[in-house]
Image (cartoon, rainbow, N blue to C red; front, side):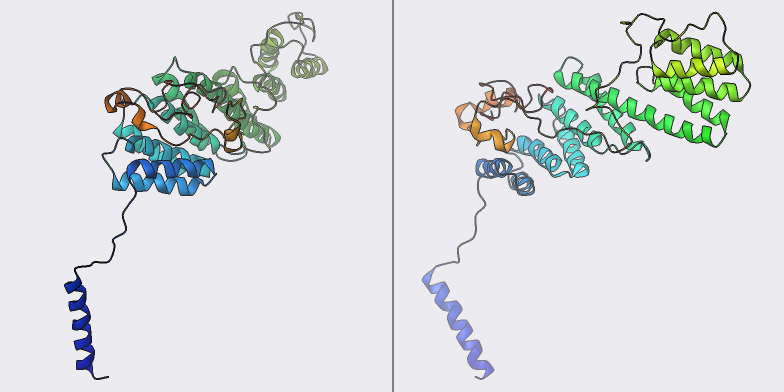
Length: 351
């Protein structure tokens, strides 16, 4: 067909469309509430990546909607469930910059701390991530000291400190094996001075007895043994220290025998439970969705994800004054046991 004929047909087609007055349908974006509910439904079904996409789409298309702030926080939570901790931290920090006085800021800071906490590595690796977790969790304790988030954050801080002490002990043992006794003493003394409430202190004191005896410093060895005997007279570490002093003929009347303390003596260095004690075999484990009693059995397999929104049930001004996850309605169950009531009172009603 000649080129001129093709052009004529094209113009005729366009003219026909214009004469009919009909246009091709333009796809419309769902409204803010629908997008929000899509995201919530995706969380219910465990499609966390899809959920974060829906919340992101809501923010892009409806930046001034009443759902936007909630979507920002829920997007950070969806990233957390995906294990995308860097993206979650970025999103949560953005939320806190835009809503610094939000009633849900406490949880945002707490979830941000959990993202760092989840990334704590083995004690044989660099512990910068552990230090970042301590800093982030300490911010929760400092800003919201009376909340349940602060109490749980403090527990995790103690576990992080125990992990850091374990790292110091690992390095100290290495130096001791290499007969670099001065470097080993520095590591062990740091555990005793900076991590006094961890369960690594008894071993650190016993190691100080060993190293000081190897260096020919019996007075320092007896001093470390005395501190250990006062705090943990029934521990195996004190028995080791006592036997080493006895073998080297360095016992004095002031050095008590192992087991001579009170049987029920409260230790200065509380032992952590096996489930929460950092180990050299792997990172600290924390349950993303701890099991809890849920009143609605239909949510049990979804980990207590919020249902569809019923925002129209409250006036706009009332929704603004109350937090997204404030305890307004009947609770469904504890979402982050034993963290508190951030999710526990609102999964059945969003606002």
